[in-house]
Image (tube, rainbow, N blue to C red; front, side, top):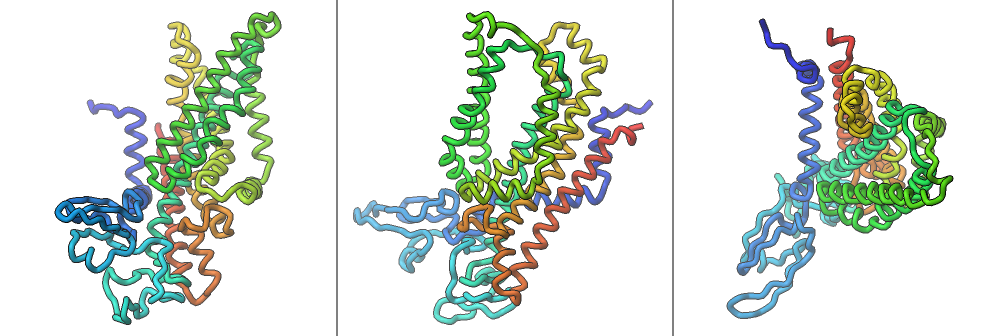
Length: 434
């Protein structure tokens, strides 16, 4: 008798049997690695420099210059990491990035659209080759397209994954509560309902708006730091909401505020979803992006807060089925709190359709970021993106490399996420499990 696999392992095995999914996962893994290592892979500052007993990692730290003191003579020397003098190069131990150009670093020797197969020149008119060249050509001011592609992958993956993480958290939470509690299962006092509603704006202000500087600084440092800062903002948001909910108990000294009533959770959330769906999403995002300050953080929040509706709808529909299953009734009979049953027992078994939607949503978010950057209203001009490279191609139609390479990157990445979404849909389809 053969050992039976768990449903999850069976679905995962079915997913990995699809060659298109494996190819998509390989491509996405490469893109994630490039995004995480972008400052190391393409930078005009060295990855590592050791001089006079001092060690620096300029490409990781983002430092532009440093002041060192010779331990023997006591003489101080200022080092510019982006423009090392010949004497410093002879004295120091230097490890450069493979692509030693930054996205917006101008190379006047190869300005005015030099193609990847054209002759390129260094200082003194000397012809250059190999990794010294601009492998994918240059733009109008001599900016390296390869560096722009590498750092653009970081922007696209960051926007796609983080925006859909925000959308997923909102959609899963609201969809689960709408489907699980319905209109006649969740009771709250009027005081707690009023205070919780009033707490939304201060929670948003102190959790996200007041921390805009920290979030924007985290964008420039690393995706890991950005995720950490977003987690802090989310914890602050939820903490303030919880505090206002607890403060609602103080209003119970007045009899009217102590009265409990059912919260029409399903009706309120469903009507809110219908309102957002009725609005043209693209026009809404473009309008908000055009009004607000160009910022990668703002773009992530805009896409995230407008992309959760489909996730909420699928989660709600699945939760309507799950909430009546036997193990949920058993958990209630054991006296478990409803919140515990919802998030620890019901939601994990209703999350599969949402994961499929999130995978498709990441592809849509990358396309949205590219479109907004192409129009010049997505991110600040000093941040290289695939969309901004495409936009630069409008200035010179003969510079085909400005269109082809970013276009291929967008196509392959979006297609990979769509193939992954289709694979997840087929793998977790109940009709295929028999």
